[in-house]
Length: 323
Image (cartoon, rainbow, N blue to C red; front, side, top):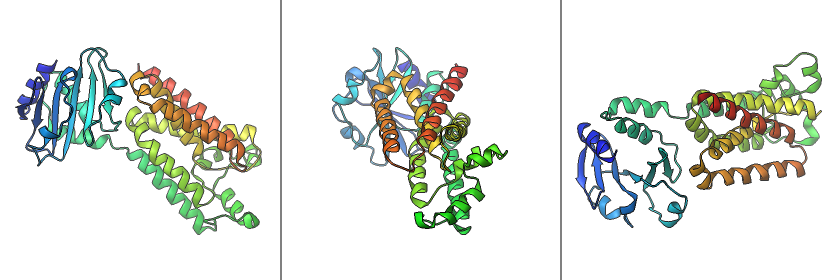
């Protein structure tokens, strides 16, 4: 496999330089990006001496071949600041980036190189563009535009409980979850309420969470599956709130908890990713936010739970179907 990848790089017009042992560096004149490839048993203590000879290359990716598999202890033993490593578990065929990254270009390259085909840089640049989390950014933009429309209609940036009637009128007009109106037939509020926020602080918290979680979810599961999880989780949160909470509610938090649940299941099914700490970090974030929702008045934890369960189950179904 190693020799095949080296040959494919050479056929693709890459310049190869022998470093030490099995390690080689590969650069291409049309890219400001370099590759280093070698066996885990010969992993150096520092890559900087090798990089210093190529000062015109600002970004390096290191492909570490692991014939006997990988273990999370590898990540704790050695750290290489400024270097993106890709541990290739050759026993199971998994590629594990460290530190974690959403970059899809290297996996695409390796897949093509391992098949014995040359890397077509123009084609791959389009692939890299298609991997951008544009749906995440679109959803952030939609939420901001919707909020600005509500502000122009009279919503307060910082709602005052003593003047809540003005804000409540705007929230209802724009589609907040109101049980009596849904029972009267306005079921579209299950969907519209996921784009409504009660003040700029509410908006900022939810959009920051979407900005942090969205790209990783979208690039891990794909654009279509990401959108399915987001929409269904938002609906699941609204429906749970309808059945278990009588108060007016709104916000994207149900959909965001759905992304948390989807990422949790995704990492659970990938032991190396779970052992990296992502899984337990997600568990901690979920527990802290649910605990905060139970002790802080005014937070619709039923929407959070509904979104979390819906997102987890949706991820289970669509990834199971994919297999």
